[in-house]
Image 1 (tube, rainbow, N blue to C red):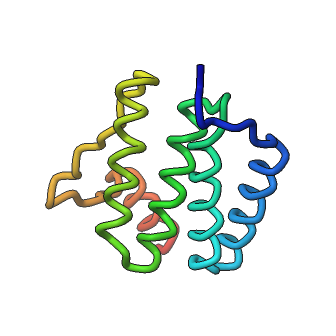
Image 2 (spheres, rainbow, N blue to C red):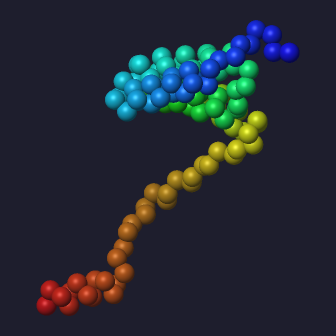
Image 3 (cartoon, rainbow, N blue to C red):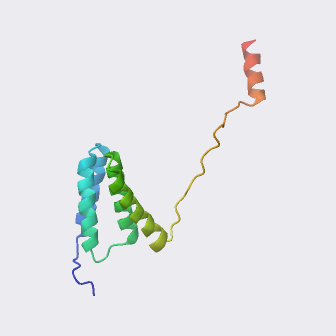
Amino acid sequence: MNEGKIVVSNERLKRLDDLAQNALSRRRFDVAEELFAERLTMLGQYHYVDDLTLALTLNNLAFTQECQSKLDQAEEHRKRAREICMQKLEIKPVVHEALPPKVQHVKPSHLQQIRVMRSA
C-alpha cells in the first residue's frame, strides 16, 4: 500500500499548472518556479501520478530555473525528467546533428538568369 501518500485533487494540480503557465507567459519566472515546485511536491504525494506528468513538471521547472540563470538546479531537474522519459516511458530524446560550419545558401542559376532578364 502507498503509506504516506495522499490523494490530491486533480483540479488543484491543474490549477497550479495553469497559474504557472500564466506566470511564464508574463515572464514571471520566479513565480512560475514556485508554482512548478509546489506542483512537483504535490505530485510526489499523489496516489495516481503518471510518469509523463512528472517529467513535464520537472522539465517546466528546469526551464524556469534556466531563465533565471540557476543552471545547476535546472540541469538536475532536466536530468531527472530525461531519466523518466528514457527509462519509464521509453521515449528516446531527439538529438539533432549540428550543421556543417560552412553551409551556404546558393540560389539556383535559373533564378539568377530570370532576375537578370527582368532587369534588362
